Image (cartoon, rainbow over all chains, first blue to last red; front, side):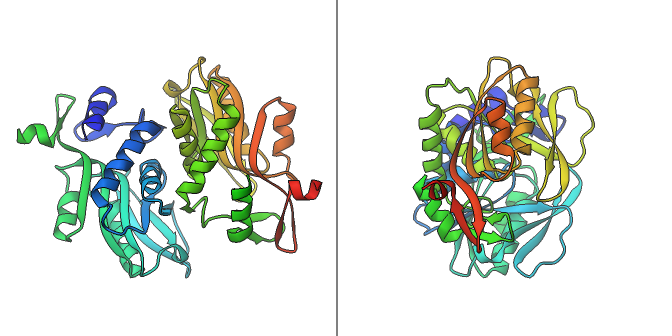
Length: 194
Length: 194
């Protein structure tokens, strides 16, 4: 998505070897017009898939997932993160490890919001090591629902998440694919291929 | 807003004396079409106020605040909650006490996303004791920016938040105003007045 790649080039800040900060338009300050364009793009990609629900994880996933849900006119469910959670019968849970923060969280979704009839599109802001998306697919499996695919805003192709989902046969659509960071600049996968 | 009152009557769950659970359409599962209608209503109320930014607090505030930002075509900034936060020069912070959870959080917004030129509309899911909205107005004041008003999805008129903002001259627009819970049912302020 050229609009997004241009915005990453303009406003993204590369920190160290593998961190891209996009807090000026995606995960602290949010550009709603850009999100709505993203939502339309995910809709075009998955509109024939009879999607019944959009799933994401709080908080950074909510804006792009909401913009997508607004296109599909289906409910968005966002998993809540808990540092610790006593087992609850009415929740599906999964443990998600964050490589960036080096901490584990339990993510949870109320069982009543996910049924075996659901055809789910996961939407998240980043795909790096794939832990958050994996947690959501585990929860969807627990519910007997179907993961139709994942719509990712920014994918880091050099981390293992993409391969994990390719291996599982989960269709991943990423709006910007970052192949590397070079001298503090972002190299997109389509530039590298060219 | 009749659409919202009807939805609260249909899907809201009253717990005990003063808790209304709306996790089926507002703060866990989210109905995007309803949120977009709310955003339009806030836009109609504040469209002549030269709003430059929408502010909220993660996570439940993000969906209604995003839908509002999409109408204004201005950025949304959501404050992050921290259990504890070492003082950071580049952040505005405020302490917010939750009566429901009986815990305090520090909320924080990066200074670069709020300037003295900003005319801010706060959007949040609930107004009860007003602690979260007060934290945001404190941050806006620290930045030298202007709080134009607050757009609230559900107000509990019997708790002290509304009076706090009336006393401060902050204009509050609430889409549903709950006057009381009676026998497990919601009594809206407009019914009580009638």
